[in-house]
Image 1 (cartoon, helix red, strand yellow):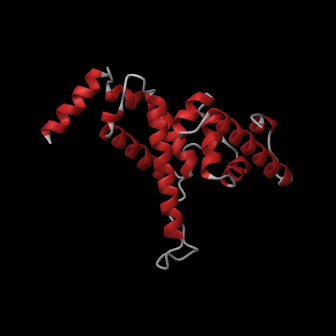
Image 2 (image 1 turned 60 degrees about the horizontal axis):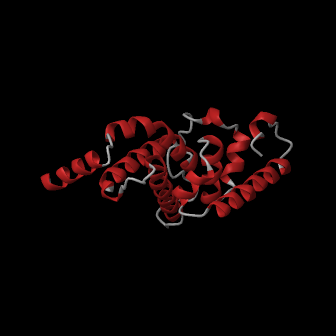
Image 3 (image 1 turned 30 degrees about the horizontal axis):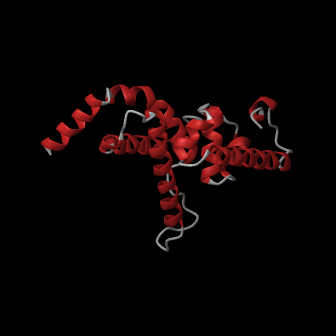
Length: 188
């Protein structure tokens, strides 16, 4: 175990990475991303911690060319997808009554980011579409960074973003009887 810790310290020194600085710089952004993907504060807190544990355990994958922020988002993206898949599986197990919530509906932390209508519309998107919308509009990442996070190419990311925007717009227009402020959908 001591040998593993020494190897991680060597990697951190070789690539000039201060892990505590990496956490403090990226914690809130990763947490916000996880919250928007999982729609639950407690799940987002757990996911954020898991992302940084996975990052620490995978330090050996860092190279000089690694964009650390994109690398963390990529870990968060895959972790959130796994959590969502697990939640869907739990929902269909015979031991879980369908009318019981899977987790506490504790969504107060980041609710100010989107109105209820926008949040409902985001839930209509696939996890991939929701990820791209969140990374582009909330986290304000470039297509290049999103491409690295999602292991895709830039034209595919752009196309998925455009399709997701159109889906959101259609959903919001179909539910027009709800009052939505123009500035809330300015990204559409």
